[in-house]
Length: 272
Image (cartoon, rainbow, N blue to C red; front, side, top):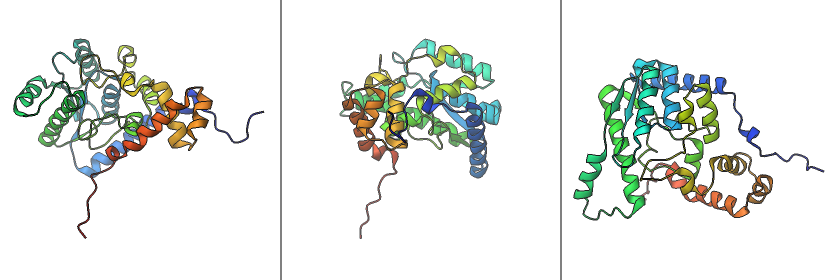
């Protein structure tokens, strides 16, 4: 006999009304731009699901003329096929695409940082998103735009973003949606299948993927987070419902806790 009042965790738990979600996000974007007195938005595009979805949503909301797309590939890391996908998507949406190759900047910093160490993947990898965000804010300042971030709720909750890199933006259209919900929204916005089915990657170094670093697939991660954060279930309850090791759930809970500093402004230390 099933316990009364127990919330069941299934993929259906995260189903959304994509039409209503797109409409609400569009309305909030319009309100934000009006309040900010800006001319439009700039989106950093990689050819991945999240940035493609944000780009399409912004065009649907604002029209192509108010949306700037900026691709910032790195030689030897970014795939040529991803850049081709970006070009096709931008062309299909009627958006002008700018390309800013970051490799020369990365190489320059390698020479000027006295303790530079390419073997330290965390330090080296995080350098790239910070270069990209500085580039996006140049566009924002030059053309009076807001930077539309591409992070989703899954990434935000586990801190899977670079502090003051891809985590820095003026607003996050997808910040309230889990990765699996972004996929649903992408279908509504007619994101090409070849983009939707790609293995998620932050493009920090060759062969890097989100799920390999996180140690769990997004389909499981989203339900774990939904259970722990949204529903207040215990790790044991989540593990039992999803039939996964409790250690996996405990690890996710731990990551959520110790990444809290990435979701907050820098603390101001009172001198008194």
